[in-house]
Length: 170
Image (tube, rainbow, N blue to C red; front, side, top):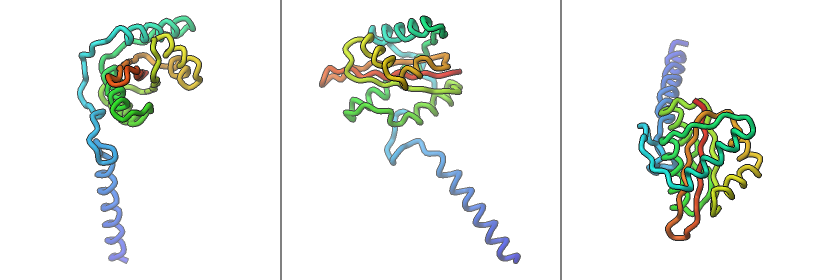
């Protein structure tokens, strides 16, 4: 009986050690991922399209009785990272959203995170209209958030615009 207890203790301790070590990876699929920034990014240079898109989102929110969202440069930086990923990989998706979300929770203290992406809209108005016409995207725009960030990045090869918009609640 004593021997069995020692074996059980060893199995439990080994399982705990393995579990704790396997939960702390900074990479996905064994590749280094630049979306794991741990420090606050304070500087971000907004282009005209980004500022216009953010204004349209806030104008809409206010028009339906919601609070305007405060812009945070760190969030826009995370959005820009995702746009670059989408351009580099020729995709439009939410890949690694969990990593972006975890970063915003750790760095900014976010308690809620949502994300919208869009592709190939020429104007800010067209992108925001498409989001508002989509129930899931509209839900994010109208969500219980306090802050946001946005990046609109043009693919140098194709001239097409990639939009990533992240909302958080602090």
